[in-house]
Length: 508
Image (cartoon, rainbow, N blue to C red):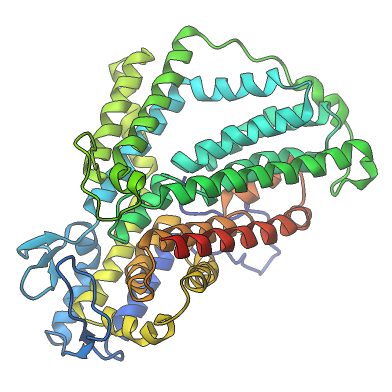
């Protein structure tokens, strides 16, 4: 899930030297806020004419002075986090302010949604059902190596694509590493199974609220838009990644000398630690079934079924379509958290505590969304957003749709590294990228898919995430060895992603 990335565990620094660490997502966004505010005094202001849906009309850009003086803009900077949460866009002037009259421009809905799903996931893990289910699956397949790898990676990938399963994988190294060693594999196989299994799911997120959800909201489209393309991409990329890990595992078991990391003293003996976990209780099975139903219902509720089944973007919704957005989904996960807690018999005190704990644990990604939205408010009030759009309008006008999709993917690769927060990156980039899709004649959902894939690919290797650095530390494999293992897969996944977004752009 999206949390401010952390670097590797601290180590003793040499006397007189200070260790250099990458700033947190909140710090990066604070710096970006100050930089963008300073640029509002340099970049000329201007606006596009817009249609009834609020989309800019190509070729209508014109210069227009921004309202207010220096003090007024200083007030925009001061209030940017507030506006990012619940700023209202004035229906007449278009300016965003907390006390304006108009439509909500802030990200309060997404903010609450992130806290709600954090509460839900924390309650689910408190039941122990999900952990136990994965442990039982791994133990059941312990005698069949390839099937074990495929089974665990499929489950991790499924959790990644629907709820951003990432940091939670750190708890499984103690189980997976001994199992893989017992089967004649090395520690890199265990590392790849865990990191790449969950990571490829996040890369090809279908309804992951921390990636697809936040980006779709920022792009002003439904969470279900483009889900068919993302589902197809998830299947293919997951299969390719599983095949890649299995191929390496077979090579190592056939010839241990070809291992990238070798074997540590006691690795064979460590296999004895892989004890059989207890059976799933009836209550735990019921919890797993309920969690499955919640995510299945979420997917059903957000898909625009009429458009998906007819292929017409303007198709009249069926009567049974729900068309839910973040307000309803936040309520769904809050209610589901309570119901799961009651079903698991956690008790009122523990359910309440876990909900509060979950919301608290997820306040960091929620705040990155607010800060990133505050940057957008500064640009909007200074009227430079449309100027930035106009500056690159010519670059995308007439660009083949397929090429545009690939361009969005490539542009977001460095942005994903510079902004170490999936949610913050999405909230910051989408107000610029989504309207560009309109100019290029490409569906905005393709931009969301290209963006999340770029973010996902970077998060499979960047050394600023706890998932990568914590994972290689727990598995006792060197980060350099992990990079050597994973870079061919990263290239292959990038080629496949470019193919998918190009196809989606053309088909859309």
